[in-house]
Image 1 (cartoon, rainbow, N blue to C red):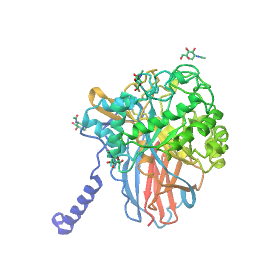
Image 2: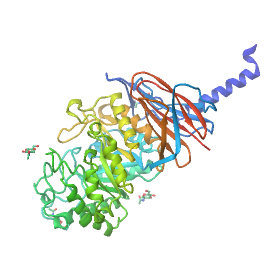
Image 3: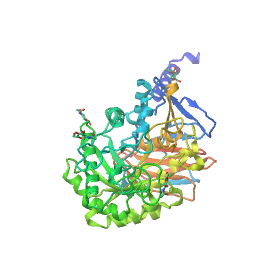
Image 4: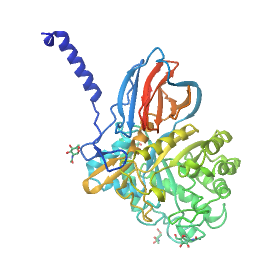
Amino acid sequence: MALSSPSFVLLAVVFMAAQVILSAGYNKCVARNFGYDSVVCECNSTYCDSIASVTLPPLGQFSSYLSSMAGSRLEASQGEVQPKSTGGGLRLTIVPYQKYQKIRGFGGAMTDAAAINILSLSAGAQEQLLRQYFSSEGIGYSVVRVPMASCDFSTRLYTYADTLGDYNLDNFTLAPEDIKMKIPLLQRAQALSPRPLSLLASAWSAPAWMKTNGALTGKGSLKGEPGGKEHKTWAQYYVRFLEEYAKHNLTFWAVTTGNEPSAGKMTNYSFQALGFTPEEQRDWVALDLGPALHASSYPHTHILILDDIRILLPHWAKVILSDVHAGRYIHGVAVHWYWDNIVPAEISLGTTHHLYPEYYLFGTEACTGWNALDRGVKLGSWDRAEQYAHDIIEDLNHYVVGWTDWNLALDLNGGPNWVKNFVDSAVIVDAKRDVFYKQPSFYSMAHFSAFLWEGSQRVGVSASGETHLEFSAFIRADGSVVLIILNRSSSEIQFEVWDPVVGYIPSTAPAHSLLTLAWKTQ
Ligand SMILES: *[C@@H]1O[C@H](CO)[C@@H](O)[C@H](O)[C@H]1NC(C)=O
Ligand SMILES: *[C@@H]1O[C@H](CO)[C@@H](O)[C@H](O)[C@H]1NC(C)=O
Ligand SMILES: *[C@@H]1O[C@H](CO)[C@@H](O)[C@H](O)[C@H]1NC(C)=O
Ligand SMILES: *[C@@H]1O[C@H](CO)[C@@H](O)[C@H](O)[C@H]1NC(C)=O
């Protein structure tokens, strides 16, 4: 009978082989619903969902990865590039000759809180968690922001030089939080990563004795003037930090001029802060930090200014970057995402880029759950994943070269945080159960970080008509194209992508979905 015919058997074998290939190395999300609009994926010491494969099919086919409120998580599929338009509907056209910025990378922050949470898991679960972010089966994180000493996501207040009047920094010493927690985890992350990690350091406060208010918290600045002994010592503190981490084989790509300098000037933070006006920051870089780094063993460390919200742009950049004495030491402008929805990207990021195109823009902090009206952890919030994807696409479309999430992991309360400034995180750890939950925002990050490798260059993409879709397109160093598409509305839309080099890609953006399409061009 037909069933036993040789050709059927052959077909069945081929079909099964194809299925094996598609599911090889692919673990499905173990979904859990906590009553919000979507689900988390639960991972433990022996199991975690993973991305099927980011290896692209041959020329003439495309890969598609879908995450959605309905529950898809980086769901992979492949299709044929078509020689002809399917006609009608929305068309997104790739414009390869319109070239913009090149990507540096994506990542998160190794705060004291993140380290405490990761280490609260069993050895096996710790390994799974680190692999999720950093290994070649993970989502391609290459940037890690490291707070210099304590911040609000610490369990106590400390700096590395709390000995009164220690202007020579004779008693400078890393904290147990560095030696026992952050450094070992960073070394493990580096060992898992297929490429060198780009470490980025930010300080929250100088030692209290160097400050006008004599405290790590609240309104206060360095005593004296740029060029004076407190400013010089504070610059040397950066050099000592780099030296101490280097003893553990961890070298930094960049330092910022300090976390949220406006906080220590304008607002009265209940946690660690150090105020600078842009003029003070300019002169401190020109007279102290720039020369100190230049004369140190780490003269190639990048200096990023601002490290604060983009409403301060372009003014902050104008004050500092139009000064040649400061500007020659500086490489980029670091931005935090808070209040982005009330500050148009074009007048802040866009204007800054057009005024100072030789300096890059880099996202150094973002989290959800920080606002008093929407506080803390929401397990399974798709809305928060959309907030991430919307902001990343907007930033990328305005010359930003990388985007860094805040804490790599928090506990079920969104802490620990010594001032109870609890927020959300892409990974939430439940130490009691020895599991961690990958939030929808983890996959938001992944849709970019797993595909936009360092050196990927943003290119033009134009829509044939009005659309609510948000998108950004890139050509990677190997010539392949990556297109990320966000649909924040509640109905499905069909569209096609036209890459003049290869042809037409028919696609659909389901309601509330995030899609990464990728294909070879040669
Ligand atoms: C880990 O999760 C997997 C999948 O849910 C489950 O089969 C396994 O029993 C869990 N392992 C432990 C140690 O709980
Ligand atoms: C500071 O360092 C000096 C020399 O290493 C040491 O004698 C002194 O006890 C230290 N002081 C404090 C307060 O740690
Ligand atoms: C330092 O790190 C590099 C890679 O970043 C590695 O090749 C080297 O073996 C490490 N050295 C030590 C002493 O750990
Ligand atoms: C700043 O806040 C602290 C409490 O966090 C308060 O004690 C202090 O009075 C405030 N200072 C100003 C100048 O508002």
